[in-house]
Image (tube, rainbow, N blue to C red; front, side, top):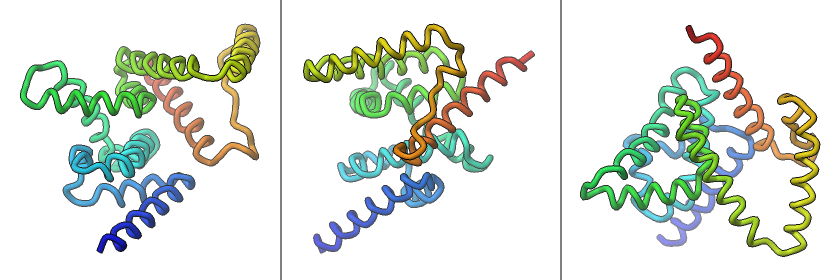
Length: 207
């Protein structure tokens, strides 16, 4: 039985990875979120947390932003899950400690997803908080790089700054490499920038 389980987990992981590379978010979501499956139930065992959670978060977020109307409604449970963790950890209850552990894990693993989700809901304060959190994590990892890598990153940073300081917003947004960048990278760029323009358009046209 253990060999069958291992084989099943291997093929599941391979299928999810393939769909992720091809940006088939609907297939990923339907495969993970079977009847009675929620983000809360994904915490029931380590396999689901380590192997399924990342695909669950990514697929729901993509569908929330660019899915059909029904898919967007179904994907709202991602924001509800994030918001629930943030809310319950501010209160003192018997479940707040467990929720705090969950929130700490989610914040460490998915800060960009948290920022995007709250940006989508126009909660700009929390979105900025998680963007800053992600930047802090990045600089923390950066500070631990070797001296040669750190020097290279420093040169890139200065070059980008000098290029951006003389250009407008649109010219700052670089596109991925046509050949070397993956489909997922292009999808991230198109999805996120589409969301940015949608939010800006709504804010401009609000009475």
